[in-house]
Length: 148
Image 1 (tube, helix red, strand yellow):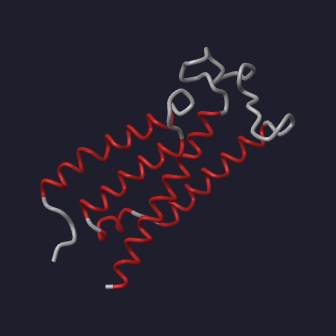
Image 2 (cartoon, helix red, strand yellow; image 1 turned 180 degrees about the vertical axis):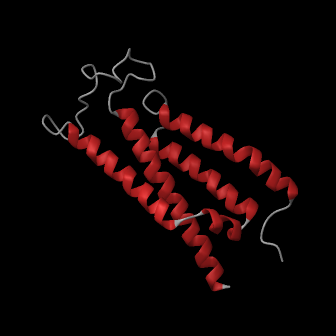
């Protein structure tokens, strides 16, 4: 018995997974301007991983999933988020020191580069959420196989 889907689902997944990733990156990068941000974008990108698991099966997902890489990515996201939060510690925790006084990310309000630390924080949260959800998905999928 094959654990993956048919040709139509695989072909559609191959075309859709990169688009989901691009859309998730858009949500992360525009999080300070529109509804969305790191969590929503990270969850969207993790949805591409769920689609991959469904379309190609657990054995193919295991070949491409390395627990150590995703653990490191999740840790990196958390460390970058806390590191950026501590940069403003001379004034207050999470103080946005780059906004209107930094060398970059201090553009005209309403533009992509206008929010100081917020795009960096969104990127860190997106990375953490993406890596955590992919790891949780793989753990649940693997656990389910152990029970059968």
